[in-house]
Length: 134
Image (cartoon, rainbow, N blue to C red; front, side):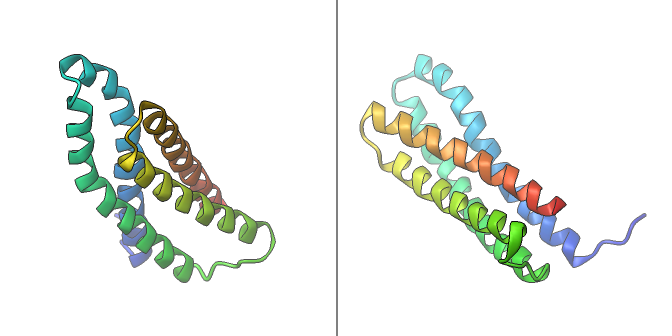
């Protein structure tokens, strides 16, 4: 069996938190139409429950992201640095848009902020893979 290193643990925790944050958003988006059929209040109730695990996962993502940057002695120069800065911006957009989605009161606000939150979360995931390969 391969040896487990702290880098393995660090990446595992980061990917686990990303699974909750990104995967949960995608799953919830897919469930909303069915939840509406059950009750008009069901999507809000389920979203509140999801937020109880999603926001701690987001905090873990940010913390392990900082840990990743420190551990790999990431350069903020060149193509890697540009990609890293874009990822940091996209992560901030993901958190901010998810927060705005959770506070939105109109259907348009819920839809727009939810879409931005989901797309920015997917973009952050993609950029993370790109950085891991770089």
